[in-house]
Image (cartoon, rainbow, N blue to C red; front, side, top):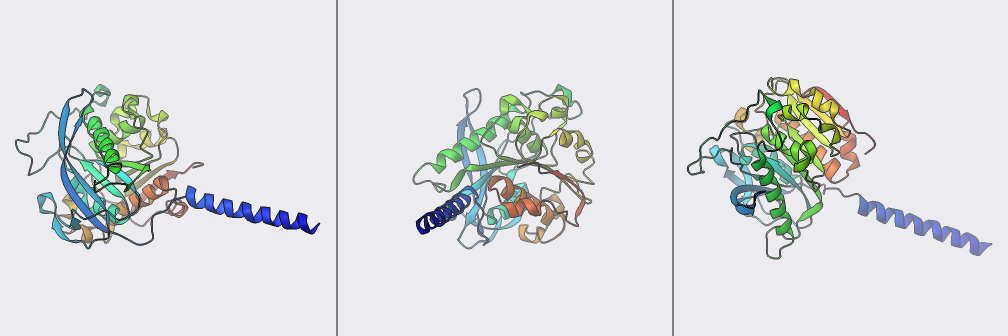
Length: 344
C-alpha cells in the first residue's frame, strides 16, 4: 500500500515538473530589463517577382547592450542609438516595417527605436515611392488613385510586396549565416509586420488581403492609419487569420472614419485603438519636429502608440499573457477602443 502511494506521489511530482518545463518552453516572454537601441542602415540586393535583381536601402533597429549616444536620422531627426553596435545575445522577435507614400522607414524612428529597446528587431525597407534626401535622382512616381479603390488589384504596388518578401528572406538568411551581425539573433517563429498608411495596405496584402501576396511567416500585423479601401471592395478580408491591431486618430479624417467595415470583417483577435486629436501623421516625425525620439515618447499620443504597439507584438509574437491582459484596458489618450481577443 505504501509503495502504491509512493509511486502515485512520484507520478504526480513527475507530471508537475513536466508541465512546468513544457509551460516555460511553450510560452516565451521578453526580459524585464530594457536594452539600448542599436541601428544600422545599408543596401541589400534581392530578386523581385519577375526575377529581376533590385537593390534597396534598409534601416534596422535592434536591442544591444552597448551604450547608446545621440545620433541623427534623415531630415536631421535626433535619436538615441549606438550605430553598428552588436546585437544583444539571445533570439529576438522580428518586425518588418513598410512606410507610407513619399515617406521613409526612419520617419517613424520614435516608434522603431523604442521597440528595439523593448527587445524587438525592427527592419524597414525604402520602397520605390519613398523619399530621402540621400537618394540620388529620386523622383516621385505615379500616385495610385486613392479615390478609386475598386480599380486596385493584386498588381497595385506589387513592388512593395516584393520589397517586404525580399527583406524578410534576406533577414532570415542572415540569421543562419555565421559571421553575420544577425547570426542566431532572430526568432524565426516570432515574426510580425507593421505598416503606416500605404504601408498598412502593403502589410494587409501580405496577411491575405491579396491571396497571391500571402506571407505565412508573419504571425501578427500592426496597421498604423492604414489605407484599406481596396480590401473593402474585394472580398478577402474575411479570410485573414492573422491577429491584427489597427491604430487611428480622431483628426485622421481621410483614413480612420473609413476603417469600420474593415475592422468588423476581420476575425478575432483584433484591436482598434483611436487616439484623441491624432492626425494621419501621428506615426511619423512631423508632429514632433524639434524633439528627440526619447522626448517624443515621454507622454501624449506618441507614448500611447508605443505602448499599444509593444503590448500587441508581445502578446501575439511571444504569447505573453500579461500583455494580452493589459491590452484589455483603455488609456486616457484614447477617444475610443474596440477589441475582440477571441479564444487565442
